[in-house]
Amino acid sequence: MIEPEYREIYRYLGYKGISPDEETDRRIKKCVADLNRVITPKHVYESFPLDTGDGTVRFAGLEVRSNDLIRNLKDSTRITMLAVTIGHGVDKLIRRAELSDMLDAAVFQAAGAAMVESYIDSINEQIKQEAKAEGFFLRPRFSPGYGDLPLSMQADFERILKMSKNCGIALTDTYLMVPSKSVTALIGMTSSTEEACSVTGCESCSMASSCEFKKG
Image (cartoon, rainbow, N blue to C red; front, side, top):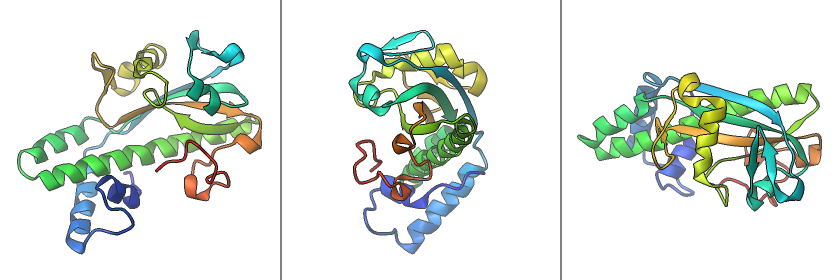
């Protein structure tokens, strides 16, 4: 069972600074309950030594040119590749709802997005504790398709992490993931506590006011 951040669901549905009415909130909670009956959360991750010399990110046999990723990985000497999904059940519920109730379809979309975010946060916390035991702290997650990091890097995630085998994530010809409620991310690992990222959320982070990667 995954308990999502309801404020994230509200945000995805377009509620900014306000809460939905009682009836809509009831439907949201019912949709979350329905999703929890069909989700199949899975993940895979692996860490590698990292070199960012000459403006090129090098790890796991890859050489990546990305100014945004370079900034994100500041002072990192290791990097983790991570892929998570909550399974095909979400997509099935969305397709079914699209034929009968578009509001439920929208809620399933929003709740599914919030749930996969909650799931990746929990795995991020697991990685954080493992890194801490080795004297490392984590940088913010950074995903293919964000900034100048090409979405085509999804193919490298598949090749290196074997996502299709290990957690059932397939790629389309345009590098979109199936199931749709799946996320890939790179996480820098640094020995500098000043560069560490709070997995518990931007609101609790002392760097939130100046972080260019802050959510929302």
